[in-house]
Image (cartoon, rainbow, N blue to C red; front, side):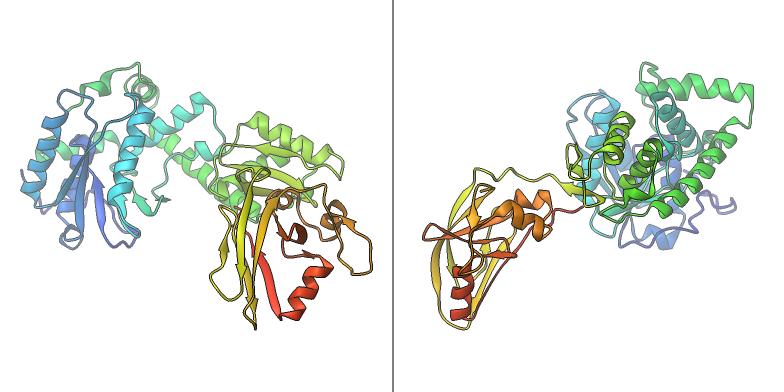
Length: 424
């Protein structure tokens, strides 16, 4: 293996993110071999560099590839981690998920993972998303730097073409493995890589450069839109008067919140409902991990919560001791200048209840009190109802009975509920 000291740097690391530890995703193929070799020529970085190889156990040659990667790293004096995984399926998505899980396992907070994605990968990604159907975010392609889980991903070869990498491999006489599955064109990305891109290059040698430039231009536009839309939660939707415009704003807003965006049809329908539904209605869009709801002239993105309607808990309210932890629903605080303890019951969604908030007054409907205190509809589903001796004493922190206020005053006590976070 020849190290050429006279060749110009292969990887431009001028914008390399600062990290505690650097890793390189090393498959043993051409691209990652070229990157590994180039990084091995940088002494300061090499001292903080580890390779990580994921053995998918799909190909009969998998174990040989893992050993090859160990041998190359031994020659280059770079530590290597080999992780053996069992993907749930043999498709591209399952293999990618298995790799990501392996990386997530070994990289710590503040670490950086370097991958060998290059310009052809960028074009491949843009075309793949274009053919599948995508929005502006998808058309921006692969970012050079981005945060993934708790670590950073850095792609220092995005400015190079596959031909550039091939030239480097040949000039340095670098050994690498060949995965025959890369030529199985029934995989979508392989089809684009092996058949579509070569035809585009025949048509115009500048095609890849032009598509890459387009992706960069779209990225700048996307960044501007994201900054203008922002990530405030709740979201002021009233500045948008058109369903299509609002749907597009939701698309960028949810991306800014790092949430999976629903398809256009669902966003359009929710946008229509937000703009057209009567003021006393609460349009809702339910998704896997969160939901959107319109309330009080704003749209909120909220975490999905457990249905607590049928839940009931026996608790002990003891002043100045540990707080009462409500399962998945925050904490109750009870403090007093005196020693005091009450057995109590917590219930939820007791909408039929009334409560006497003034000693000489009538019992009031909770529905009216919720409106008076501007308690949002999602909080009404999770707000704890406190009963002592089968009498409703408190609903959350804002609604107390006259008897409970008297008790708190007598013992110079404080009672409050701090909800678990539900706004994304």
